[in-house]
Amino acid sequence: MIEKFKTWLDDNSITEVECLVPDLGGIARGKILPTNKFLKGLEDDSHRLPQSTFIQTISGDYAYEDSTGTLPKSIYNPTDVDVILKPDFNSMRIVPWYEDPTAQVICDAVNLNGDEVINSSRNALKNIIKLYKKENLVPIVSPELEFYLVKPNPDSDYPLEVPVGQSGRQETGKQALGIDAVNEFDNLFEDLYNYCETQYIEIDTINHESGSAQMEINFQHGDPLELADQVFLFKRTLRQSALKHKLYATFMAKPMEHQPGSAMHIHQSIYDKNNKNIFFNKKSGLSKKMKNYIGGLQEYTPLLMPIYAPNINSFRRLFATWGTPKNVKWGIGNRSCGFRIPSIEEKNMRIENRIPGSDTNPYLVFAANLASGYLGMKNNIQPTTETKDSAFQDKFSNLPKTIDESLSLFENNEEINNIFNDKFIRSIAAIRRVEYQAYLSVISSWEREYLLLNV
Image 1 (cartoon, rainbow, N blue to C red):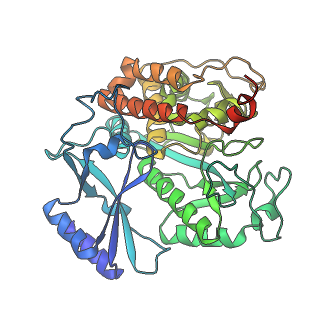
Image 2 (image 1 turned 90 degrees about the vertical axis):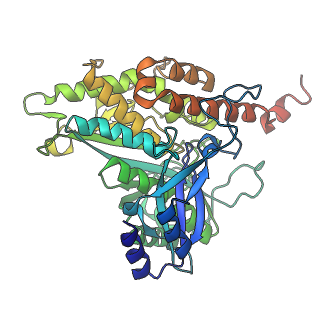
Image 3 (image 1 turned 135 degrees about the vertical axis):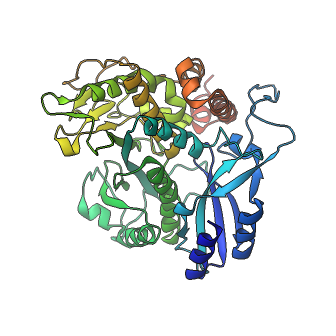
């Protein structure tokens, strides 16, 4: 394997290599090394990171289970033992925005004894895929990722603004599916497509969404691990493309007031060893397995909201935005449902999960979807009846509305703990609590506006 790396690096005249590890928030951590140091590290397993990388919060702090600062024994080791990075050759790509020939490679993480790092998001997804492999089943996913382009915002206290396009004007009104509205940023998207092609990121179409300068990129369907890698790299690629054109690109779930939120819709289907879509039944359309899979999504999604809604801002998208599904209902072609069946044709039979925001970690979101569907099929869970009317007006939501409520459900389900591992669950919960406490310490402009001189 080392020889394969060396040949690829020589063929592409690479001088530096970025070793990337997605943490539990989906952020790229890792190291940048000269090529010769990278190859030497492959030989002696010297590519290492602190164990604490996998309990790092979105702000770079570290998570503890107890708010008093007590160190949880099974999550954080006070000696902070290193873990070994194992670069995945299949993820090797050129970094196209650097002048010097630079490569990037996504790494798995293993402990010094060779065991996988349980609270690594990439390992979590790989373990769920193994469950399907044991059943001779192949999961297929296709994400749709929404994002906003905004003016540069160096002052975090200042609200985001709609950027100026090629016409010299800001976009006004709602331009859903508007071609000219996308063309306002044509130069940026030309660079984006070129960068993605260089990295073998197989994006399909781009279209304008309902928000001002809000876009959506659709990915080709395929293997969940490969697609998670692509989404992970795409987020970085889009940010770099936007910066080149003096703009910001954001995947915040709800970046601006009075604007729609940004989602990451997950299309999913399951194939058997004969390459047949097990969701399709010639007589009834929806097979029994598909209904069980939907039942699993309905049963376990409320328990997995710390993955689907990882940040306090995620709940703003769900509960402060009209038109965002906040339910676990399902329907054929019904966009108001959390789980939509876009088509009942055999070749297109799939389930679309419309609940996750674009701020989620793709590895964990894919893992949560597939784990829920797997448990639904294994436990023969029956779904509710199809929803044919609009569910947008429903006042009752099946989903937790706060971080605290979501964590309580997440931590206290035996099946979720068993399928993901207790250490993984506790790591996610500890990170979310530390992030939430950090959020509560910030005094917002709303509080200064309405409370400062009135209470």
